[in-house]
Image (cartoon, rainbow, N blue to C red):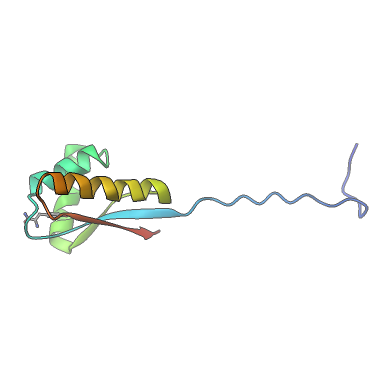
Length: 99
Ligand code: TYC
């Protein structure tokens, strides 16, 4: 049976977790509160109550966290927000930040 003596090279298994990214929505004066709630429910899978709370936090504090994801998923969420906003004529913006 193999043991770790100095004749053997010890195998190192290093696990690297993927970096995580916060997706934030930014406040503006033109996007309706209803639309932001809809975005939070449909894109970020929040309940109505959670969505309402997050929307108000953004409205009062200029920005707020909608979710935390790997890079590719965060990027997709940002794109989905921008497309839905554009399709509905709102200037709503999303950004991502490394956690
Ligand atoms: N400030 C907007 C209003 O008063 C509502 C709003 C909330 C807009 C959150 C964007 O990310 C946002 N209609």
